[in-house]
Structure formats: structure tokens, C-alpha cells
Image (tube, rainbow, N blue to C red; front, top):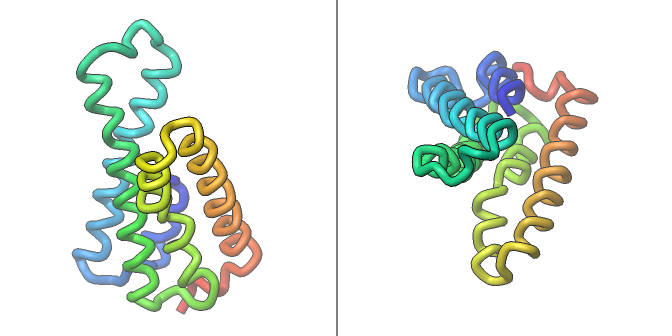
Length: 138
């Protein structure tokens, strides 16, 4: 995710204005805190019930909402072309797709749906960017 945001920043995917670049930098912060939660949650099981760790856990869905906004901005900015322009909106729609599934069907279904969505969305986006890098340049 951090590499994707780096590619988006370097190619000006969201635009070249200060605000367009700032949204990617804010996303770095959200993803860094979400990643910190993952590391702490994984390596220090004794901390899993700590309130402050629960607060860090909120940064995963926040970062995913941020990624969705970035996907929309990429589509509207039009600096990337073709599939690279529209697929980020699909790949980065995890929060807006998975949260309703969780509300309707509960966690077991939402867990599987969320994993499948992440894999399909980001693997496809990675392939688009790896196989067609010219779509990201002007």
C-alpha cells in the first residue's frame, strides 16, 4: 500500500496541486499507523486488549476510506489513462464494499469478502501498473 501511494505521488496521479499531493501524504500517515497496529497486534498478543491498541485499529478502515477518496481523485484528475485511471477506484473501494457486507452478513462472510476484494483489486491494479506503466505518465 505504501509503495502504491509512493507511485501515485511520484506520477502525480491525484494531480499536481498542493491539496492533491497532501492527500497522498495524509494517506501515508494513516497507513503508517494502521501498519503499526498490525505489527503490534501480531508480535505482542498480550497487548491486544489495550485501549490504545484499539484506537490504532481504527486506522485500517480510515486508511481504506482514504484510499477510496484517492481512487476517486485519480479518476477525476485524469492524469493516469485507461485501466490505470479507473481501476484504482475499484481496488481502493474496500471500505465502501466490505463494511456494508459486514453489516448485512456479519464477520465470517465479511472477512472472506474483504480478503477476496483486496486480492482481486490490488493484484489487478499491480498487474496493470507493472504491465502498462506508460498509462501513468503524461
